[in-house]
Amino acid sequence: MNRHLFSRRRVVGALSAAGAIAALTPASVQAQEATIRIVYNTLKTHPIGQFFETLAQEIEKNTATTSVRLKTRTFPNGQLFADMQIPDAVSTGTIEIGQVTLALANSPDAVASQIGMLPLLWNSWEALWYAEDHDDAWRSVFQALLNKLGMQLLGFTPFGVFEFYANRPVKLPANFKGLRLRGVGVELSNFIRELGASPVTMSAHEMYQATQRGTIDGFITGPSSVYDKKLYEVVKYSTAASFLFGTNPAAANLQWWSGLPKDVQAAITKAAVVAQQKARAQVKAVDQHAIEQIAKLGVTIQTLTPAEHELWVKAAKPVHDKYLNRAGNDGRKLLAIAQEANAKFPVR
Image (tube, rainbow, N blue to C red; front, side, top):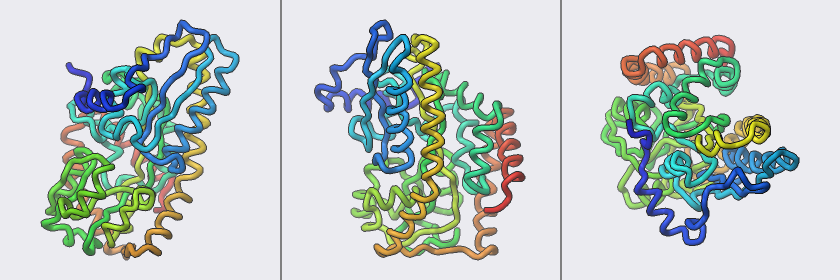
C-alpha cells in the first residue's frame, strides 16, 4: 500500500517556498552532534506548542551526555508546514518530529484511529488520559498505524475541547441545517452531514478568510484556536457541549528513529513523557482563559441544559454506529476501552 496518506505535493510546494530550510538534510545519527527539526501548527503558548517546546528543551538536556547529542529547531504555527502538510513531512523524513493530525488520514488502515474524533465520546480529559496511559491496547493501535505511515509514536498532545463556532446561533442540532462548516477528518465530517450541514475541507489557517468571505458559515475547533487566530472577529456564536477532547499524536520519522542509538531513543522517550505532562497540566486553564476572552470579545457561549445535551448525544449516535461498522475489531476494542475509562471518570 502507499503509506503516504497525506498530501505530498503540498509538502513539496512548501519546501520550494521555504528557501534555506529546504536545503537542510535529515540529521545524521553518525555525527557526534546533530540538529533536528520539530514542527507543529499552533502558537508556542498553546498546549500543543508547550508540548513541543518542552520536548525540544528536554531532548537537548537529556542527550547532553548520550552517544549522539541532539540540538533542536522548532517551527511553530505553520512557519514551515501547515497542519495538512506536517504528517507527510514526518513520514518522508523531511523533518524528524512533528504534530500528526490523524483525522486528516483517509485510508482503511486509519479508520480505528479516528475514534478520537467521535463527537461526545469522552466524559472528561481524565477519561481520555486514562485510556492513553493505562491501556497498552489503546497505544498499540495508534503505534501500528503510525508505523505503516513511516512514523514512531512519541506521545499524545492535548489540543483542547472542540466546539462549533458560527456566524449565527448554533445551540441545538436543528440549528445546523444548510450550513457550510469546516470539518476535520472523516468522523466530524460525518457528524456535520448528520446535522444537515455540508462539511468543507481546508487548513486551519484558511478558516478566517473563508468565514470572512462567506465561503463557510463556521467551523469546529477549540476556543484557544478561536482566540489565538482571532477567529472571534468572524464568528459570534459558540456551542458549549464539549464535543471533543481533542488530542493529536506527536511522532518521529520511523527511519530516523530506528537509526538512533538506544540511549538516544530512551532520552527522547523520557523527554516526551515530561512534555506530555506539562501540556496536560495547562490545557484546561488555557481553554478556560480563551473562553473568557472570546466571550468578552463578542462571542456568545450558548450553554446547554441536560435535556439539550441529550439532543446532541442522540445526534452523535449515528456517527458512532458508522464508525463501528467500518473500524472492525480494533475499533470495537478502542470503544470498549473508552467506555471503561468513562466509567472511572463519570462526571462531565
